Length: 186
Image (cartoon, rainbow, N blue to C red; front, side, top):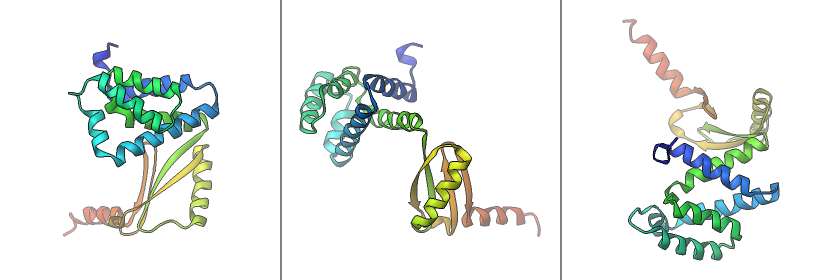
């Protein structure tokens, strides 16, 4: 596969895999994850910095200099700084968010964990989260990390998203299905 034909997800996977291979132990992996999290937070909180990183008109050399300064202020170790410099030198800083997500997924897979998005109209009680986690752990065989999102538009019920699987038992979906099924009965 040529470099020009690489798609976004494949690029992210390759860089995340390279970062994972730089890590000699679990302690270093968690350190790189924290570094990555602080870099992503810095990007999200500073629009100018984010625009700078994603601007294709700014040279890699300038981006590398800025990355070095920011990395030192954030107290990154030299290996992580070198990783970011390689990403910058290849003009790929625009995919940092994707690399971060893939890196997190690799860590979760290694730890036999998975993220589950649970969408409800109100915040789940801790007791309910524990019960739901236990049931989903039985089904998936993985440790479950629940991310509870609040979305009032579903009117009630629950939507559970595990990777590419979605279980939608929201009131809105049930009403939509009922309305569709009654259209033909005049």
